[in-house]
Image (cartoon, rainbow over all chains, first blue to last red; front, side):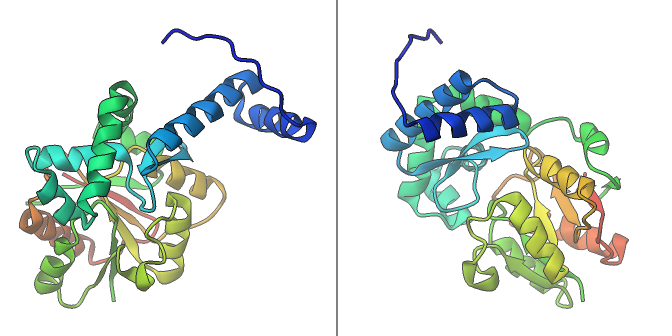
Amino acid sequence: MATKPLSLRVPEEVRLQLQRLAQRFGTSPATLGTDYVTQGVRTTLHPSIEFRQTPAGRMAYVRGVRLPVWLAVETVADCRGDAEKASKLLRLPPLLLKAAINYAQAFPEEIAADRHAGRQPLEDLAGLVPNHSFLRVS
Amino acid sequence: MTRLLLDSHVPADVAGALRTLCPEVDVQHLSAWQDGAYINATDDVLLEACWEDGRALVSKDRATLPGWLALRVADGREHAGVLLYDLERFKAPQIGALARAIASALEQTKGKLANRWITLR
């Protein structure tokens, strides 16, 4: 995506906090600031979405529930596009689920990346979590 | 008694199906567990709550959960166990198939899930 510069004036305390956070996350204040502005714009435009920092990076969630947008989309796909059925299975208000779908349609690449992370090969889990085992079930 | 917590994306009807198959197991769905106190919890908070309650987590989220669990273990903390199922094998509407698979896993493990991550396949 093409980027353009934007000049901002923030209180000194905020500048220092941003600097410390960037250091903690191993990134630059400019990159982190861009990310925060992007999140702010997106949550204003999509108020049913919130962002969480996870070990897999920043991820979009349905506001108020521990449901990532990619899993909401996955459930609708499991129901062959039937959002009403999916909302019943998830016990989620249909409008909230539709808001998640709207977000996924607005940012397909982001949700595709989250979905990709959620479909990492099962074999890789053994290297990620200690005391992992597979169990064959009928 | 074996205790399970079904994560938010696991259809709540799986709880009912599991109670029928395994009446001796205490199965809760996140939406109702502890009056919905953890409905919006992050993975790390939920793993801690599960540990305190001796309740293994049933989930299909392999995007974030492995990372949180690895961090927890790195901190020297134990966990109550995770039963992960394959989202490509068990589609959301397949309530009965998923419940039977979980019941089979409980039978094979004799309900001993603490500090284990078991992937159903």
